[in-house]
Length: 271
Image (tube, rainbow, N blue to C red; front, side, top):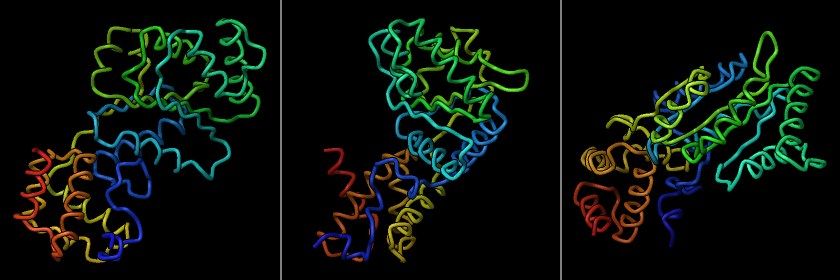
């Protein structure tokens, strides 16, 4: 019998997939979402959201996309991994994403086609074009220069491309070295790990979202403290550890996850 049935769950509460339904809005994540929405609606240009591995940047990005789902004036393009072998490949990928690559044969053709697309959509049709790039730490200086050029396209009032880069902290010194790119950042925000209270709230939130009415009581305070100390508040690590704890709970036929059970789960993970 799965723990879905034992705990009356309707969904997997601690999946590490970037599902906006399970996006826990800590104070940092809530601030990042709101500031991104403002920057996009005002067409400010370049926004950079930074955070270590496992802080929830990808899920934040998907949640941002979802928040604009019902608004036809906003067109989102999502680039999950900007790893390409050349400038030509990068530009051709962007052009295909924008739907303007049919007659392009060179990097210059792609640049021209993308420029025409941005002016057509942004000026003629008054649409807001958003390019959201995940794993932004993989962007090379050459690709950053291409993006800088795209950010040059603007009217007297606003940027034609809204660029959102989600990246690990290691990208910061890289973009700082490219001053004319770094100077274009209108929003730079760092997502830090959760504190102990938010760790507890995240666990309860995700269990409740999955259909477990007693989610807030399933983990004792001592267990939550151990989870926080072991994961240091990183959401992805919290999810993995809590999933393993639920499996152990079901296998041992217990009713709550206490300190002793949590210690055993942690020992098994470290071993």
